Image (cartoon, rainbow, N blue to C red; front, side, top):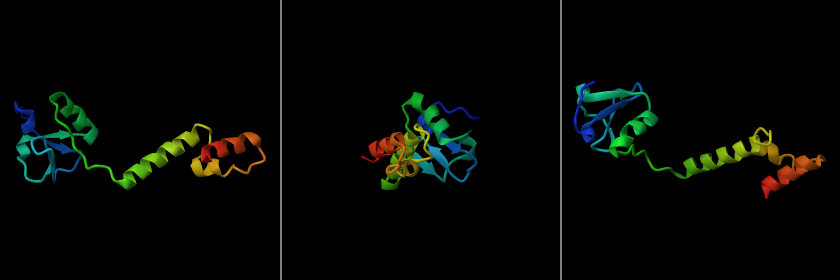
Amino acid sequence: MMQVSDPAAWFWIVGDDASKAWSSAAGAYVTDFPPDRAIHIASEDALSDALRPFALALALPKPNLSDYTLAVQNVVDATARTKNYTDVVSLASYASSTNSQWAAEATAFIA
C-alpha cells in the first residue's frame, strides 16, 4: 500500500469492484483514478471508519421515500418479533382473537 501524506488525496477500492474507487478529494466514486494509489478496503462501513479520524465523510446518496418506508417497516416488524410474532401482519391478524392477551396486543399495535 502506497503511503500518501494527504488523506484527501486517497482513493479506495471498495470490495471487489475495481472499476471505480472512492475519491476522498471528490467525496464520490470515480472511474478515473491511479490504480497504484488505490487502497483496497472490504466495505463502505470499513471505509467510513477509516475516513472518520481525518474528518472525511463517506457521502452516500440521500435516502428516498422507499428507504424510509423500508426502515419503518423493519422497525415495526422487529417490534412485533419482540412479542414472538413473525411480523406486524401476523400480530395484526390476532385483533379479533378469542385469546384476550393476543387481541389486546394486536389492538394496541394497530392503534
